Image 1 (cartoon, helix red, strand yellow):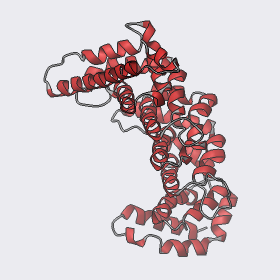
Image 2: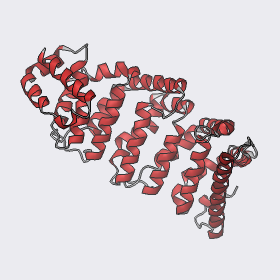
Image 3: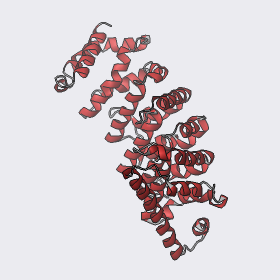
Length: 370
């Protein structure tokens, strides 16, 4: 209850700070210990600690505590180092406890209660999580805070209702997605930049590691709708020029993507374009001459990992049944060079990866027939 006072004071009371740290550490221990005991027990006892925690932080037990979670998230940098881990662990636990574990069914109602609280207070909770990524970019965050915020960001959007809230309007996407493409992916801290790309993988692909196909289908439908609606702002203005710029491109941008970012961006692009529900996005992407040019440049990258991922993108242009005349012309004009290059392209993989071998044969034959 004294959290707001603690952070609004210019002189942080050391004793109050120690008390906050001790209680966060204790709460985290109690939550995970209760889960450990319930998973080892045959009984279906109700998870009292998790229930009381959710009731507390959502304001169900005391309305004055509704601002606790937003206040902690807004002031993550001021919280003691170890307590930052505790805040993220508690937040993630309450959002995911009903999705994971053999006893997940006991926690579904608790998880939904906290999820609904996050949805009701979406801006005040997600905004500080997003801003917590601004480390080394004239922001006030630190690498450890950025990583904790990344884990909480992904926990939020493993829920369809929260993901819908994120992508329901261009304004929300501008506030809570574009900073990852415009700034955070270019963080000078390698771990932070990689973590940002992991968050972008979830948001742009909509893929969840779950068995419930109904939930996955709902996510995929939302993803396809928002990727089509905001196609130009996402792909043409941000993702392709800022994360996929080939080494040979004539760009003097200080935010030229490094090897890891380009490789992860190619993986995201491949996943998105080869997902059935994103057919409209794929057709639009494959109709662009500049996108084809970039893919052909990436095929000649010095990294074998980049070239292999680039092949998965390049084949989209080749096998597209609705190729525009300008795409056909580029492929046809470069037919001999492309086929000659592809004949010796990653031949070491053909024996162990028959799918790659067959796809390469298909691509070569299709180009030859143009």
